[in-house]
Image (cartoon, rainbow, N blue to C red):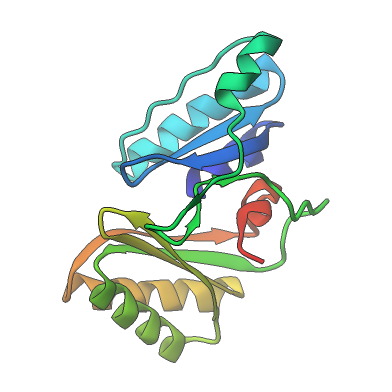
Length: 185
């Protein structure tokens, strides 16, 4: 979501769909003009490098219509991780949100439960979702004003570092349209 937010804010691209893969990762399929897609790819690589997260970012200029059958995945649900593996944007909003979204990603349930409990006790935030990504990776999403979300994420992050493996912790102020469209209802 952090990478998607950066891509949408720097270039006029939109999400076609996202698809979870077998490792803890997501394939984001975007559309837009070739120049905007190239700018979004560059932003994705820079953000991912700053987060020390490996990514593969590839641009297919002018994909052929028959190729759509290969990249436009049908809706799918994984009983193993108890969630859809393919998502299409649904909650289209015409403007940016007036709130922030925080993410705390860990490996292991104990660490994530302690992190979210600490976050909720620290600031006035609400839990949006808990997403299982496979391989024991779990992300909790919280919502609130920017200061509250920052305080909650910082407190949750500190708690995880003493209990388990922190994968990532991040705050997205005023999330982009694509990020909002992928948030749970």
